[in-house]
Image 1 (tube, rainbow, N blue to C red):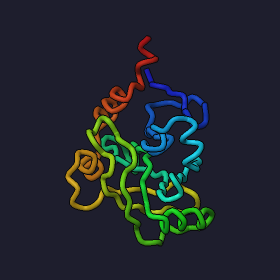
Image 2 (image 1 turned 135 degrees about the horizontal axis):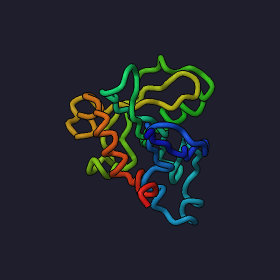
Image 3 (image 1 turned 30 degrees about the horizontal axis):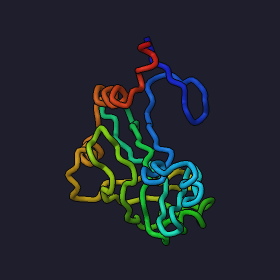
Image 4 (image 1 turned 90 degrees about the vertical axis):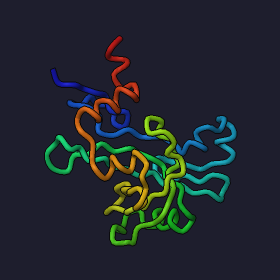
Length: 174
């Protein structure tokens, strides 16, 4: 029996298992009260500024699916804290192809609980053509479990286990 899920972005039902899981805001911004968030941050689904001095971009951290064919992956939609220059480059080049731009440095701004502490892990950001979200790669030499899975890929069973840990199947079991 094929699995189905309702996409939180488009609201439509899709066949198969979700191949991405995203965070709506950097953890530090999300943890603010409603009024503090209003007073201290500016954000949309791709860019965020906190206290006019901290800058974030939403990215995709891809884990290749080793059981599939081709370029299939499970992607974490994570926020990355970057310097103002990187943030402003992304903002000012929204409709341009800046994929040729050298990778930029950043740090993961979400704690992906199933991996232990991921907050602050160093990453390299690779911009994509048009307004596609940037792809992030854990910095070379990082030995964190997330970095190992990004380098080696994950099996279909691991993909399923991630979704179980995230509570994806909880409602369908009721």
